[in-house]
Image (cartoon, rainbow, N blue to C red; front, side, top):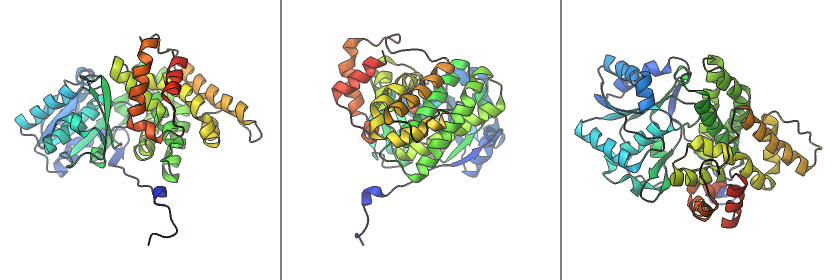
Amino acid sequence: MGEGYDISELRKFVAPEFVFGAGAAELAGQYAANLSVKRALVVSGPRLEGLGVTGAVADVLAAEGVAPVVYTDVSPNPRDAEVMAGAEVFRREGCDAIVAVGGGSPMDCAKAIGIVCTNGRHVLDFEGVDRVKRPGPPMICVPTTAGTAADISQFCIINDVGRKVKIAIVSKTMVPDVALIDPLLTVSMDDRLTAYTGLDALTHAVEAYVSNASSAVTDLHALEAVRLVRRHLLRAVERPGDLEARSGMMLASTYAGLAFSNAILGAVHAMAHSLGGLLDLPHGLCNAILLDHVAAFNYRAEPAKYRRLGIALGADIPDAMPEDEAGEAVLEALRSLKRSVGIRDNLAELGVTPADLPLLAQKALADACMLTNPRQPSAAEVMEIYEAAC
Ligand SMILES: [Fe+2]
């Protein structure tokens, strides 16, 4: 053995068991009972609790003999202290499993609570790739947005408030045991949240597709996710109750999650994590603002792949079109999708100043997602990309 192959070409594909479709959330109690759960920490956010979604999931748990303990002290961009406080509630209440109900923030917080409980360490000790020794307790995720795919992925992003940086915990132990992916739960998102989360899904697909850790399996999911976003995002933004559009976006998010969880991400996420840590900004909006600017930088590293992305977004890019022109068509396809769903923001409007750029660039270059970007930028180039997005 050892002859005739390149070990760097091997690819692993990890995914949780998941149930997809309207009504999937109703199965939370049954799944928890099958896992012999007695008392579940239900990690959710104030918005979902206000809408009654958290309570509804708690009720289906209780109906199957699983006692719910609700924890909703979770901010957008969940903080290290919230993870540690949630872990304390888990221990104090004698919980034996976690059910996450919400978008990326409650799901990431829930994943982190799990490993803090089983490993008895501070959440910030797990920063990086494969740093988690023991898996967390059984975890069921019930996503309520269509974009983050934290219910699918081996990623967990936590805001290190002291250092003002978002840390990435990447580990197979971060993949939940079960994801119950129910598009009915996404109809309560307003147009802004729908656009932000939908463009997060698009960014996952684009970054996974051009990642230098991509594979035939992740490419398949990534390209289909882009097609689904093109077909369904605007409709979901304009008609919140349109279940076909909501299901299309939920599927897009799931496919993009399967792609990026295994192919990892790139400079958009590295730079968005840096922004989110410094200024506590919405993740999807940061990605949306940066997406075409990073594509402009990356294009020449993967021109054929960007062409296919442009075509999946509906751009007319014949084979004979010269490379520069094709690149411009891809960028315009990304920009027009952003505009169509109302994203016209720039980073300056969000409070980014020229004085922030060196630190933002330094943190972005240190982010694990930068490693798989198809073109490695210098600090000066990262600052230029931020500047172009201001
Ligand atoms: Fe993301």
